[in-house]
View 1 (cartoon, one colour):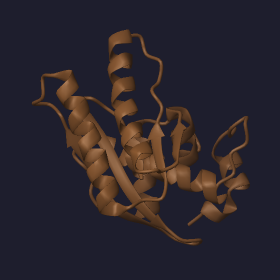
View 2 (spheres, rainbow, N blue to C red; view 1 turned 30 degrees about the vertical axis):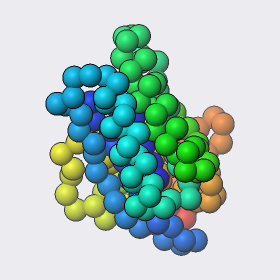
View 3 (cartoon, one colour; view 1 turned 90 degrees about the vertical axis):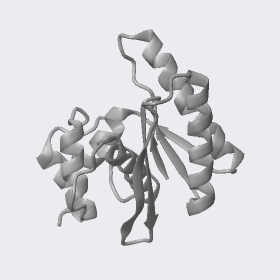
Length: 178
C-alpha cells in the first residue's frame, strides 16, 4: 500500500505483486475539502487508512515523507496527516517505510526532479492506466507503492548517487525496458 499524505487531498494505492508482475488493485483519493476542523480531518484520514488496510490486507505500507517547504504551518499539517496514516499502519502491525519525494520520482522516472505529470505518464505506461485521475495525488500514491516494490524486490537499482540521465537509468535497469 502506498500513501501520498495530505490534509486536503490524500492519495492512496494498493498493488499486488509477484516475482514478475505488478498489478494495480485500487487507487483513489480521499478528499477533505469540506472539512474545516483540522482534528476532524486527521480522524477521517486515520479511519480511511484503517478501512483500506482491513479491506485490502496489504503486507507492507509505504508513505511519502514530508518535504521541506517555505510554509512551516503547511509542513506541520502535512506531518500530522502522515503521522495518523502511519499510526493506522502500525496499529495493523504493518511494516512502515518512508520515501522522499525525490527518491520516489527517481525510482519511477529516473529523474528525481520529475513533475507530477511526468510521473503519471510513466506510471500510465508501466501499469497500463488508461485514464488520468482527477487528482494526481492518486498516481503519486501509486508511485510510492511501486517505489517500495522496486526497493524491496531488487526490481530497480538505485545507487546512492542516483542517475546521470535516461541513458544511465536504462543501462542500470535493462529489465525495466518494455
